[in-house]
Amino acid sequence: MTDWQSKPLGHVIELQRGYDLTEAERGHGDIPVIGSAGQNGWHNKAKAKGPGVTVGRSGASIGVVTLTQREYWPHNTVLFVKDFKGNDPAFIANLLRCLNLAALNSGSAQPSLNRNFVYPIEVRIPPPQKQRRIASILSAYDDLIENNRRRVAILEEIAQRLFNEWFVRPVGERLPIPGDRIEEWILPSGWRFSSLSKIANIIMGQSPSSSDYSAKDEGLPFHQGVTDFEGRFHQNRLFLRSDLPWKRTAKKGDVLFSVRAPVGRIAVALEALALGRGLCAIRELAGDQVFLLTHLLVSFPSSDMFGGGTIYKAVTKDDVHSIPILQPPEDLKKRFETLASPMWEQLRTLTNANMRLQTARDLLLPKLILGEMEVSTAEETFAEAAE
Image (tube, rainbow, N blue to C red; front, side, top):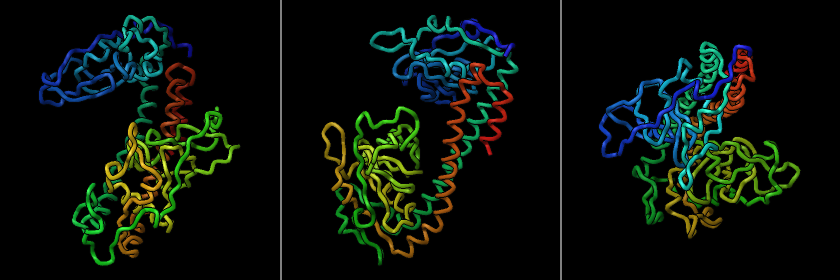
């Protein structure tokens, strides 16, 4: 690492505050407007060339870094890099992400980031050629993750179209809405409505005590509610001590249903996990129709049909038990599950791959950017992670 140099950040880049642009002033165009949390709309004029890097300078998104590859309009809620001084923009974006810029709040009631507070930060910088190598490794992770996300979206769309064709159209291209009298619905022969409790076991979550949490990122995965959801599957965030008996648990493949605001969000358990008070687990009794059950639950506007909380909208155990579930003929359900199961496995495989890639990238990012790992080692690590 002898070719790395220590410099104040102000010697590495020049920052400038973004430009005012009200909603009324925005023209119709394809120029991205970059705000404190990222892109927040479009305009017909650009104020900065790409590639560009912005940093949220005010509000809750102070310190959020955004990299854009094209010309853009930096909003007045950001600082943008006016001059990279020969450095690689993608490397600079990742370098800024490694700095705790939110801690440099210079505001009082309203969080604010002042570039004069940022410039004195001492950073270590490699030559531009090595910067590009480092940025390309991190970009490779991002590209692979994004490619997997696109594949997930395609599979989700195929599955939804299949579900709509087989189960939505036969009941009039709509499912129950608040106020509907389900018993008055005219269904095809062999179709019926059933309460959720008759086709599934329901396990309500509970709140752990503060001493139940694991001090390390190990133990029994714990999920409190929708903050742990990303798309169809949950994402690990918290853990409980493995030496404690925990009865309120979900099994791999259980449907997770949020019972606190917002009610009715759905995910699927990729592994055994402990349920927080904001969740319940729905375990399909037949054990082989989880994919269909997930679609049926998503298709009902549960957040509107249930919920009697005052401060936070919530549903009780009895509410969940009484959720009406459409029940087509058994042979049709089994045929759907046979077609959908391979898609389910692909979705699960791609989601698991993205979780591993994201973890690996997050571990590599500070080591690479701060010069704690050789670039060649990181390239070998990516090759292993991408397999």
